[in-house]
Structures are given as structure tokens and as C-alpha cells.
Image (cartoon, rainbow, N blue to C red; front, side, top):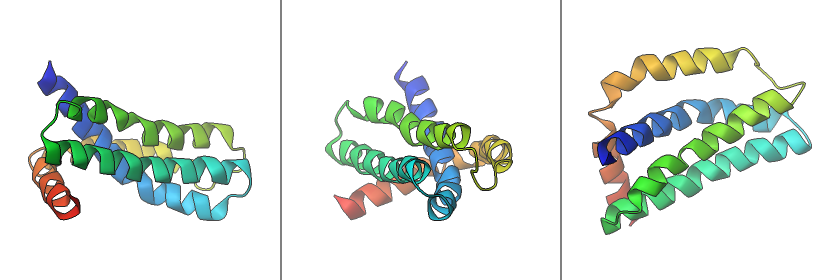
Length: 123
């Protein structure tokens, strides 16, 4: 079961990394409440990144919880897309999802090593 949660965490991590530049672009282009949702998605990404790498550094079992927490930045970014009527580049989300699915398989072997290096550098 832990392997499936870890695999889901890696998929959500990769999706968050792919969606982050689009969310940053949208945060620059939007105003008001939509900008707040975009900034929440960006800050959520970094919160989960720090929590995930801290759990990796400690070797604790909370890494499984942080694996599922990667859904938060994705959920916020997709909520922003659905709730803002004037969101920039609205058609990019389906293409970003396709890029995530296509590039995830080659990244499965690389992502844990990258995360270990990031964890060692931060903590």
C-alpha cells in the first residue's frame, strides 16, 4: 500500500512542478480574488515541498501524508482555472495534463534522487 501512495505522491509532485509556471503566469496576470487563489497554489507548492523534504530528511512515516498533500497545489490551480472567468491561457490545462502523463514515466526513476538532493540541501 505504501508503494502506491508513494507513486501517487510522485505523480502529484510532477504535476505540481509542471503546473507551477502556468500558475505563476496567472498570478501575474490576474487581480483580486483570482490572484489570491493563484498565490495560494504557489505558496501551497512550497509548503508541501518543505514538509515533504523534511519528512524525507527525518525518515518519518509522515512522508506518506505529505505524498497525498501534493494534491493541494494542483487542486488550487485547477480551482483557479474553473472559478476565474478571465483566466489567462485557459486551454493550457488540458495540455499540461497531457505533458504530465507523457513525461511522468521517464521521471519516475529520477524524481526520488532529485528529492533526496533537495532534502539534503535544505535540511
